[in-house]
Length: 102
Image (cartoon, rainbow, N blue to C red):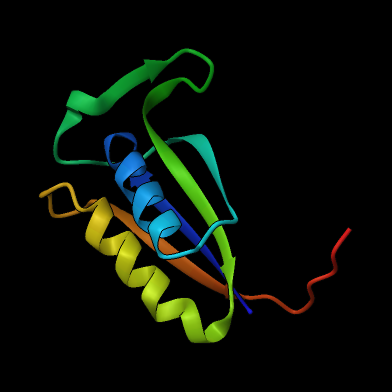
């Protein structure tokens, strides 16, 4: 199994969720995150007094899927997360060593 962590712009999250649900990727997590990074367009940044830096609020999507479904999931995320900017986010993939239901 594989774990996908995708950092996407908040305004694209709904489209990504719809695409994943339509393709039967029904179990995933969405979390608002603050990223400190250099971006070309500062309009989405805000100054965080908590962190003492300019931050960008994005959505982190976490999805665990079977290895054979990995490329399809990545393609759906990429296709629906595009903002038209050069850097629309990033995707990380990790191996899952074990999966135990609770």
